[in-house]
Image 1 (cartoon, helix red, strand yellow):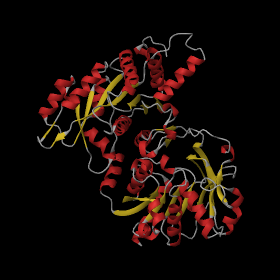
Image 2 (spheres, rainbow, N blue to C red):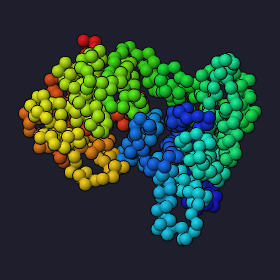
Image 3 (cartoon, helix red, strand yellow):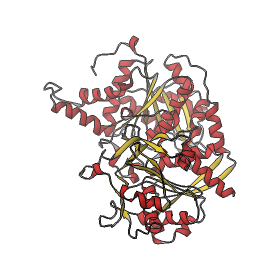
Image 4 (tube, rainbow, N blue to C red):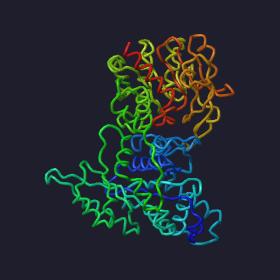
Length: 544
């Protein structure tokens, strides 16, 4: 992007930047997603992007215990889990354009330098890094009415300084009608003093202003509502209008209440007023009904999530959210009980699984905890407990069925045992010589064709659809006949029938395994077909 100012008369798209102050984990992603939804409910087109300051090129190789799940978009981009929040709230499919990192920015600049594109100039943070960031920010120019941009990390982090400088430049170039800055900050309650303390927020705003950015709106995360005196104090010391100091209270039941809370505080109207836009009529009745069913459901079930990363719930964030969506649609509260598959290895499946109404065996990589997952599958298959296997969960179901029904003694995946006689799950043919781990799997949305008369068809109501993938290993086609002969239905395949996408048991209440990740396409209000039907089956079993 050239550094000269863009003519304001030619600009259509407005930009809203969301930064975080005081500390991390305040919920910038939820805040950005909620504001995006409010604007969309008022008739505007919206997209959201995440700029992450870490040096990783993408989060694809990052440990789930550190960073939570890796969210995969339709185009196969491995992204931050916040993009999952964005998609679930605003019901838009995002892409590689919606996420970048410091690693990606520096990589692109260095690549340009190596190609001689800077014509021998000294390559510096300003202007080259900041211009690269601005170029990414404006990638949707003219496509949407609003682009919301979340900056990862906390104001003051050394890694995020180039992003903040880019925002400062961008805001100056675009003007107040086309660039709006929100700071999500923290107002702690000090129990000993019996009061909220505004000083951390004051310091955070001061630091942001030292970087040349004046926040237009403060969302104050707090346990208790701000009193008028506290609101006036924050407005005075932080150089914002009193009406632009918003309570960001903890919601009581679900994150899907946040847009409704912001709506009561007229957040969208404040933004539109500041940007000289006349708001259209809002339409949030469908969202309100969705939330009401989450808060006051008629039924309640418990689903066990058997996995390897259960100590950190964010490792399965999209699965947990998918259960909330499917629960609302089935008028049912879904309690998710996290079950470490390694614990099942050391004990009996019955002691961990007997008190749940259904089981989901989750995705993952590596051999740790695999035998526990296989034990769990065997238990639910034999005891007619509804089962849902996702990615590695499906592979474990195939291994279990091979061992105990097809009588292929030491059947396994070649991922876990290179010496197994029966690799019923094997490496994809195009993965054999790959050494690098980042971005080298089967990633993104691929088509799937299902048979009529199956649980798969019953869920989707159609024979053709697409779902997102993230894996290296596949069902081994050499074993198709033996599985068919022993009653396992290969209900979903790729259009060329070379890849098995879904397996199921016809005489079981609900036993479905999928190679893809259906949780990545679940949306608030709409849900996802397989999750909806799984919870329906779980509820049917519980109610008898």
